[in-house]
Amino acid sequence: MVIPRHICFGLLLLLWVTLSSCQTGGLDNRPPTITQDPTSEVTAMRVQNYQSAAFLVGQFSLKKGELAVAANAFTNALAKNQNDAYLLNLAFQTQYFSGDIKAASDLAARIERGDNHVTMSSEPAAALAALQKDWEALYALADHLKSDSQSHAIGTIMASWALAAQGQGDAGLIMLKEIDPFENEPDSITFLSQQALMAEYTGQEELAVSLALEIMDREISDQGVILEMAGVLLRHDEAETAKEWIARLGPRFHHKRILANIANGTSGLLTPPNELEAIASGMVISQTDLNANWNQPISLAQLHLASYLDSGNDEARYLIGANYIDANLIDDGIAVLSTISPESPWFEESRLMMISALRYDPGQLRFVRELIQTLIHRDPDNYLLWLEKGLTEHANGHERKAQIALQKAIDLGFENGRAYYFLAITQANQNMVEDAEASFYRSISLSPFNAYTHNYFGYWLIEQNRNLDEAKVLIQKAVNRQPNNGAFVDSLGWVYYKLGDLDKALLFMERAATLIPDDPVITDHLGDVYWALGRKDEAMHEWRRAKLFSPDAALEAAILDKMQKALSDV
Image 1 (cartoon, helix red, strand yellow):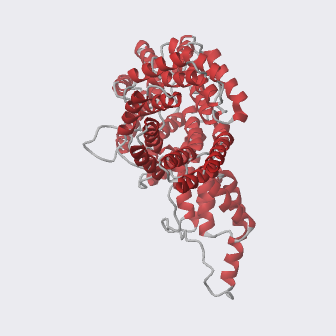
Image 2 (cartoon, one colour):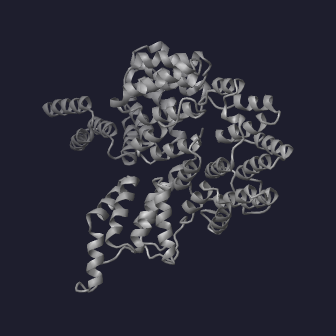
């Protein structure tokens, strides 16, 4: 599944709201200042409150992205001032975004009792009403949410299902249209999928199937929608069409296992969702719908809300985990993804996300290998799993293992420029010159516009000190496609240096150093060009800088040795 790049904006939005001095609704969110009369009893109380240990822990944790810790700290800080609007806001939002729906609902109620309002404050209460199947209360709360632009979609979904659950299915179907706020625009996937589920719920099977087929004919990036609509088709005598669509799920899903579970009657797709499951599905889809007519940032809180309503919604948990990882909260993301069971269609997707997050951590190599082996054992003919194994071994310097796995991916049908690119690198690193060259050419033939392959191949030829004219052509193509890529510009300067064209070498090396001023290799190369031009003081200056920048002991030693030899020749 392709995760929209706005997936982590919920976290960013939270940090912006809580750390800024903006006002939300009737709440004064501005942090107190200490420029007031220091003898004022009120000022003294507020200063003491905001300098309390709990508040400081909350601020520090929030800046680090530790939402659960921040939530508990801000809630504890409220003990010193039960009705402080700013602290209530902080506590509510951190509790909600960390997934504690009950605590967030209690805090939201306290805010509302103070005649104040914050964005999304009614969402947790609506979820509690839904969980209790108090449909009248849910409708009232959801109808209020519809007027809030950030909560409009889920408010409409909740209100529509509240009507349907009370026997007003036709009214619910009509209200669902309000999900899309603009007329004369194509229907969103959220609207169509929710309408299909509600049509099924109200016994309108033909409409449900028609809507599901309409969705299936679109370009859909959310595999969760495909699974949801395949379920509708399976339940209404369209099994073959449903199976065709399941087979089209990407390689990150285990199609054979999903189809086998359908055949033996154990698949959850064979059971229509209840009201809560349908609401949760709509919440998730509304967050990933690329065809939606609104333009709100994705909300981590609303994904937590979906998971709260339907603990079996693994797409919600997957997106929560991905959200955390995208925000560099790796441990939190891994913890959430680990809860997705091997029986879930989202198991492979969740483990692949974990592998990607941990691939470059040497301390996690054993664990990552175990994850990959588990997936390969379940689905040995899946080329993507072998590709992931190859990338992981390469990232950790095990080139022979990487080469074998990448070749296996290719043999299984992954005729892809990316696979050949990494295969070429692993072969080059093992000094398999002819094989590497063939793989580079194959990669370029399959992905002729991949600038990275052109640059890497050209630089590799420079390092071997052969075919320099061809290397120049390759690197020039890379620079033409990405003229502001400092690494590519450095490669072009370096090939001119090797060819003896020092003026052009200097032109490109100085530009590369401007683009990436603290790169040790680029700085080292610039020093070499200066030295060759007789600008020795400038060369020594750049080499010293390169030595300071270098995290690589071998490179640092090589630069130091070069400097010592240069000084002895002066």
